[in-house]
Amino acid sequence: MAGVSPGILVEVCVDSVASAVAAERGGGARVELCGSLIEGGITPSAGLIEMTRAAVSVDLHVMIRPRGGDFCYDRDEFEIMGRDVALAQRLGANGVVFGILDVNGNVDLARTRELVNAARPLSVTFHRAFDMTADLVRALDDVCAAGADRVLTSGGESTSLQARETIAQLVRQAQNRIVVMPGGGIKAESARSLVELTRVSEIHVGLRSAIPSPMLHRNPRIAMGAVEGREYQRFVVLEEQVRRLCAALMPEAG
Image 1 (tube, rainbow, N blue to C red):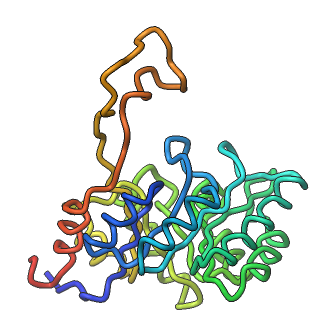
Image 2: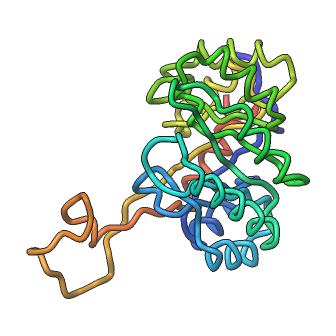
């Protein structure tokens, strides 16, 4: 089996300062900072961006998503996204992450290009809204035309491993116009084979682990969120999990 380049960039998705620090210590080269990963990630607060920027030296990319749900935004929501891009710039982010679709499941090219231009000189990632498009081939060309630097994708499937052939085809289609970054269900056990097959240079991982709440008093009669019992459980990135995945990508790991 051919060796994997030690230059593979590992981006870790986080929603707390502690997880960002763990990602950096474990060898992650970049963090994607979100709020509320329980609902797929939304724009983090200014306080979270500022404190995370102060805590880590690796590149920090900030999610720009005004709400959960679909990726078809009204005028006010698009205005919010623009303001949040500007805020991320002021707070020291290295990049922003967003995705905008139209009602037919196509990339909203005009709005995406407008937000890309507004974000410069920050790096821009078009996130997994890409996987919700009606046609991945057309969507990739549209994201390229909009000027984004990379696209995050699971190849239109639940996990990247399921769609490894599709991701490999997207890499070939990209022809170095844009970075195709697989994400979705990537673990230490699967990262190496995915990289070798797809020939990608960056991967996006979650690696979150559930930990119990330290609270001693509990009220089992009330559920504050959509999932009962979630109030007494948190999800964090553990340093050792990131280190294990990064080690699995090294040539000597085979």
